[in-house]
Image (cartoon, rainbow, N blue to C red):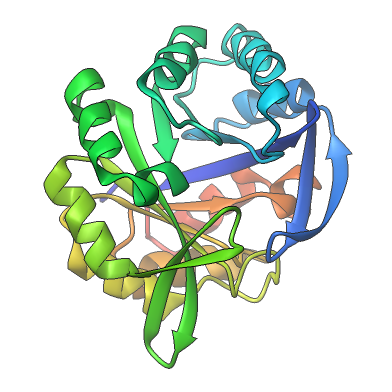
Length: 249
């Protein structure tokens, strides 16, 4: 049996968890401390937390939030959002993160990504990619919360990051994000075949079958979801039982 990780994700604005669709129509839904405690009790395999406001003055409040969450959970924490300097990464790790997730800053400055790997070690640096299909079978990596097309082919960019030394890829399909129609199987399988790294599928989970589909039809290592877990439309325990019933885990 291969371990398959089930990972909730908290997107944070102004100390509140928000959800949306394709990064739009964001709605506040819950206090992050309450949700983090719930996911600890639910035996989530990891917890990913992103600060997505883009506000410079949100950093101090976000660091305090991470420290508070670290005090109540034992699961690994991967933290991202607006990390642009080595000092930013230091602060997040000191606050209790196990890993940091880099996205726009890594695309804008691959040397920064290399410096981060050298400074903190491969196991601490995760690459997040927001992928949008720009033509049939072609995806580009987008930056700035999915607003700007970097022009980079997602697979070439992931391979470059693997060569630099990141530990895993969190691959978010912008087209599928929030739609609850299932993960993008083609995108995720091609990425899993491109890199020799764990790939975490993100974007599109809406029901139990979507989790067994992504694990059965692709070679990803984990599946991330947000709103369906936050609203308990599907629970982590239900997902894991479903995967056991399907003999996936």
